[in-house]
Image 1 (cartoon, rainbow, N blue to C red):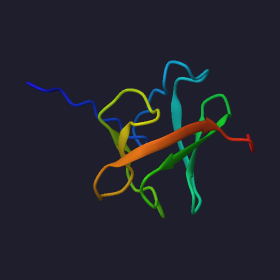
Image 2 (image 1 turned 90 degrees about the vertical axis):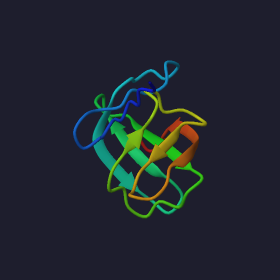
Image 3 (image 1 turned 120 degrees about the vertical axis):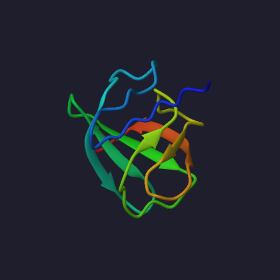
Length: 92
């Protein structure tokens, strides 16, 4: 049987990829026309770009424990989007 790991940022943090220095994301999300930004517990802001246009983040689910290029995430009630990139924001 397949086990799906669903992480909801509104309830619990999600782990970032092992190569990133900060592993946990807090529930702070800021949305712009080109990407959305997640604040980690250490105050760093991560820019997440997907192949979907994100106007508002109403939920955050992933089948993976890591958020990195190629990860499928659901940020609204629509279908899953693919993560194109996760980078430390230059604004943080």
